[in-house]
Length: 118
Ligand code: HEC
Image 1 (cartoon, rainbow, N blue to C red):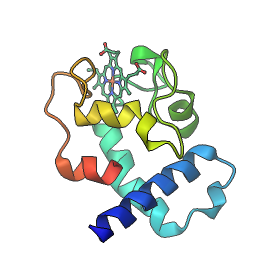
Image 2 (image 1 turned 135 degrees about the vertical axis):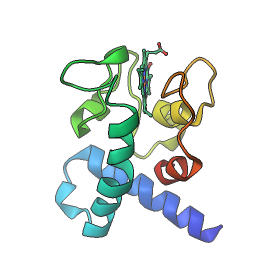
Image 3 (image 1 turned 180 degrees about the vertical axis):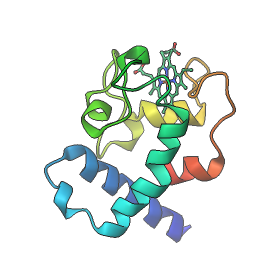
Image 4 (image 1 turned 90 degrees about the vertical axis):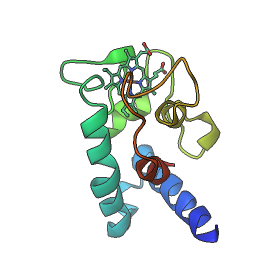
């Protein structure tokens, strides 16, 4: 339990760091590695097909680079650094909202991945 909470804090902190941009150089290498090895490949595999900045942006959302993620979709922010409760992105991949399940018409991402993003 404690371990899980610590991990949650770490990941949120990491996302906040990544998204804020200003402190990008302050990211410890092991956190950067966590993002690169655990998170980015998952988004690449499951989301970029429909949300990329090159040729397809469903809901005007691109997920392939930091500024795009931060810029959000046609409806606004999908992720808010430091405000976990406002993460549309997380609801979508958890299939919490029946009207917004990402990736659509596919199995939910594995729990391990969701936990890692959480
Ligand atoms: C097959 C195409 C497709 C894939 C793959 C896909 N999406 Fe989407 N996404 C859409 C479409 C289309 C919408 C617009 C809303 C709708 O029609 O459901 C959308 C909307 C969203 C939104 C809501 C944007 C908003 O604010 O309304 C989020 C967040 C999102 N996608 C995240 C993801 C994530 C994260 C993944 C990967 C796990 C993913 N999507 C994979 C097609 C896709």
